[in-house]
Image (cartoon, rainbow, N blue to C red; front, side):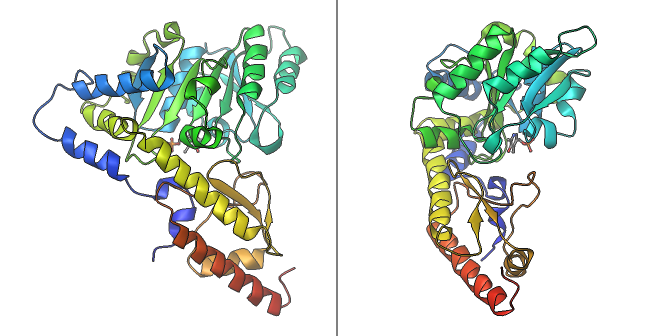
Length: 352
Ligand SMILES: *Cc1c(COP(=O)(O)O)cnc(C)c1O
C-alpha cells in the first residue's frame, strides 16, 4: 500500500462525484471562459449554500484565490493583518504582495493558529502615522493552519473589531469544508453573517482535481475582479472543467460528506495516539489534521516504514493530514506502526 497520504490532503485523488461531473461536462461542445451552464449552475449552488446573493469566481489554486482577493481589497500602500503561520505569509512565495503591487503583510501572534481581536487592535493602535503601511484587511484561515476551527462568535468579534477599524475581512478557506463539518452549522453563520467579506473556498483539498472559488459576499468588492483573474492567468478557457467539479461536490452534499470523513479519520488517529507514551498531541484536533510531538528516532522510524508527514509548520511538531480518501484501515495501520516504532526505539534506549 502507498503510505504517503498523510503529508497533505492534496495527496489524494479526485473524488467520485467530481470525477463523474467532469465526465458529464466532457460531452459535446460548450461556450468557453465561463459562458456555459456548468459555470452558472456552480455559482448558483454556491449562492444557495451560503443563502446569499454573492459574486463567485473560479480559479485554479489557493495561492491565486487568496492573492487576487487580497489585492482587490488593498492599494499598494496598505497592509494585511494575519497570523504568523498564515498560508498567505508562509506558503505563497510573496504572491499577495506581488499581485497587490507591494501591500505589506503584518504578522499577529495567537495560540493554535488563531488570531484574537486584541491583537488586531494592538497592531492598529501601535502606529497610525504616514510612515506605516495602512492596515486595510484582516485575513484569517478557517480551518486554521494548525487544524483548529474558529467558532461563529469568535469570528463575529474579530469582524466587528475589524469593521470598526475600517478593515475588510478575508477568509482563507482552503479547508473551509472541514471547518463546516466540524461546526455542523449553516455556512452563512460563520461567514457573511459573522461579517466575513470575502471567502476563498477550497475545492482541491476537499476532493476536486483543481479549483478554488473566490466568493465576494459584499458584491461591490468584486469590482473588475474578472480582469484581475484574466491578467493573472487565472481565467480558465475551458471553465466548465473547473465549474462542473463544484457542481459534483455541491449538488448532493458530497463536499460535506468528504470533509466529515477527513475529520473523523483525524479524530480516530488522535484517539488512538492519546494513550501512547512517547507521542503527544500538540494542538486541538478540530478538523482533519493531527499535530504530534515525537522524538527524532520515532519520526525516523515512521519515515523508514514509508509514512510521509510534514514537520515544517512553525514549531507545531509533525503534521498528519487526513483527506476525503483516508480510510479507517489506513489509520489503524499507521497506529500499529507507531506502536511498533515506539517499542523499538524504547528497546534501543533512545525513545524518551
Ligand atoms: C493548501 C492551502 C492553500 C492553497 O494552496 P495552493 O497550493 O496555492 O492551492 C491556501 N491556504 C491554506 C491554509 C492551505 O492549506
